Structures are given as structure tokens and as C-alpha cells.
Length: 189
Image (cartoon, rainbow, N blue to C red; front, side, top):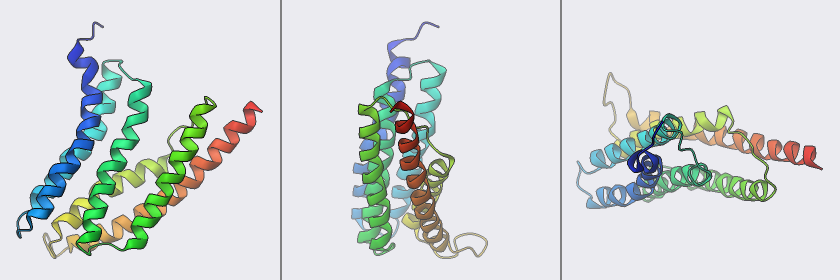
């Protein structure tokens, strides 16, 4: 397959768009009008979709790269962390939730760096993927923050509970990832 420059750069452009999305997300929240949280939720949802699209196009065009594999989780974390800080500022989530998620991400970032320096590849675990999916659903619910939006369901409660479930999955996947590193590292020694 002859890959054009556009096809080659599309996955990384989509990844970087998640990083850039943190800016309009922040602006939408700080506009502060009653309706401004809806555009913020839409921005977050669209940026979240790029998480799937960048991988899809990288595989389709056979343009997977080490840089793409490195930047993908970083872009996710920048987008999610920006949203969490905004939600914390709006008093919609607890500081402990952010501390747990951030602490886990810093730990995994360190493990990932050490693993990379030793050429150890640790595959993503299902709990980590479920954690990300829950965050991508829960955060827009908390950005919208409309009680009883549909069918008598409190969207804010769905978002809050979903985000705490993502914390549990995050901690489990963090243990799995760290354990996976030590197992892979032991094989090399």
C-alpha cells in the first residue's frame, strides 16, 4: 500500500488534537454561562473519539510508530487531567479521586520509562482500557451536570459513580502493569 503523507501523519495529528482539545475545553468551562458546559462536553467527546481513530488509522495505513505508541497515552492523560482539574474547580469531584488517578499515572509513567530503557514492552491490560472507556463516558456526564436529563436518570450521579469505578479499575490496572513489568524484567535477568 502506497501511503500518502496525509495518511502517514493522520494518526499522530489525531493524537495531538487530544492535547490541543484541552484549550477549548477550558475556555468553554470558564465562559461560565449555564449552557457553556454542553460545548465542553461535546469537545471532550469528540477528542475522546480521536483516541480510537488514531489507532484505527495507524493500523489501517500501517503507520504505527514508537512515537505514536508513546504519545497516545500521554494525550489521553492530558485531556483527562485537564477535565478533572476543571471538574475539581467546579466542585463536582473529590480531590482524593484526582490524587489517586494522578498518582497511578505518574507511577505507571515511571514504570513505562524504566521498561522502555530496558526494551521491555508491557501490553495494555483490559482493566486499563475499561478505565479509559469509563472516564470517556463519565467526564462528559459530569461536565453536563444536569440532574434527570433523560428517563429520570441523574446524569451527574452516573458520571460521579462511573468516575469512581474508573479509579478502582485504574488502580487494578496499575498493579497489573507494574507486576507485568517485574515479570518481564525477571525473564531478561
